[in-house]
Length: 136
Image (cartoon, rainbow, N blue to C red; front, side, top):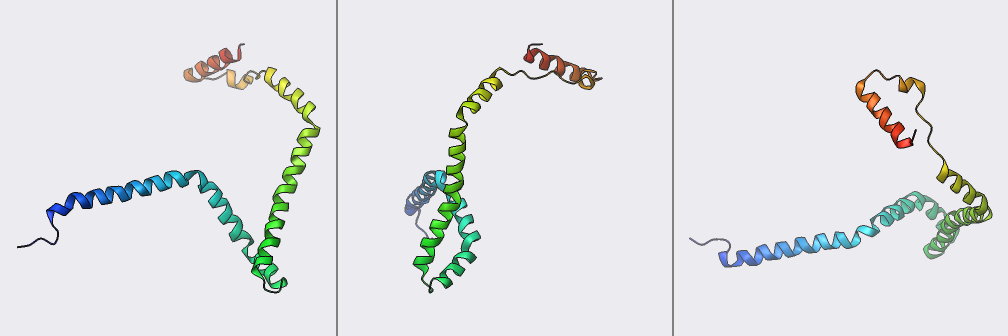
């Protein structure tokens, strides 16, 4: 009786399957930093696809012109607000620096009275630990 597969081919088959699995894992490892960008780009394309088709109809049915217009429009939608935010941060940098130094020296207030009157033993221990961390 003959087997459908030869036992001499078993190590070769197992090694081939392991190699393919290793290549799949390595591919996902290499692609993993780009997955968030791929998800966002897919979301943007799906959300703006109907608008892109309308722009294409207005531009004599030319897909390339519609893609250029949509790319420029989306760049403006993203870049202009970021530029305005950066300019606002630069204009108020001195005030922001002061607030950051004030925040660095700020202390947390103690717990309110109703928390300090805790009736559970474990709760009292947590309050004491919190006050100890605050330095009170």
